[in-house]
Image (cartoon, rainbow, N blue to C red; front, side, top):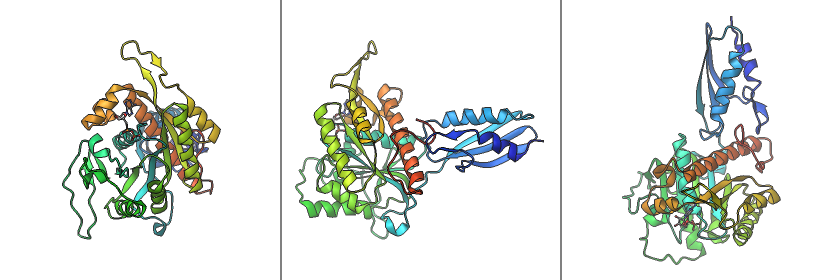
Length: 366
Ligand code: ADP
């Protein structure tokens, strides 16, 4: 006769290396049933984008199979994204569990491309995702997500209903002004429109709302940090020293306004030859990882220079959707996993009062 205690004890041997507790103590095990030699249960992770969910499943199967009499182990993998636990009155968007700014020091480093691919990669894992294009001076998400003039409508209480593209709820300045008109707005107007985009859009329930910030460290970035309770920010850079230096300015800005930096991403990290698979570090490679080590922030990953990425962006279908088997798509998915993992770590830590994420780690692996 197999007991619940035996099963739970075997599962207690599986540690989450980053949350530093076992998966039973973390409350991941649910719906445990034992029927003769058949043991079934659910492992409910903190994010569907967990990069090691299959490892967890294998380890749990192996652990339970060591119990005498077990003939069959059936595990259902699920996830519930936990929010930061802020009181509802502290957040402008109570249905949104995590709001993440995607930022860069410089323009043209691939921030918007990363934001659209991360949104799609997270959505593909089963998470509910929104994307706010706050790059009001150069909104590129409508083009990158292939939705130039969607017919927007409003709710009964006059909130704008975000446009749903590829399963992502999105809102962009590009939906409001046509893409040939330059937007010449001063600080207070920038503040007003961004505030409206956050508060007067019916975002509803979301696991992750990504905000594609304009490049730099000016008014618009500060407005966002003051208007919405950001869980954290991701900083995108290219490998050139000048780009990394400017990205580090962004690090300092977020630190000054007490927004945790969830990590940095190196875009256009290297060129991967389509013929011989050789990697060429065209713009130097690896500087971002070093900068992360220096500043004690997580390095979330790197994306190669890839003509397909450019074409997919121009054609309105992010690479993770248009070319899911490409090396670039795999990079974006890996970065999405690391980002989701950092959010899980941060959420766990916010309960204990130390909010800066670790320099490595995830919801159970790295
Ligand atoms: P930003 O938002 O930082 O201004 P974008 O995301 O608009 O930058 O990217 C600028 C240009 O570079 C776009 O044409 C985009 O398609 C291209 N791009 C971005 N990342 C890559 C990459 N990894 N490989 C090739 N082209 C890229």
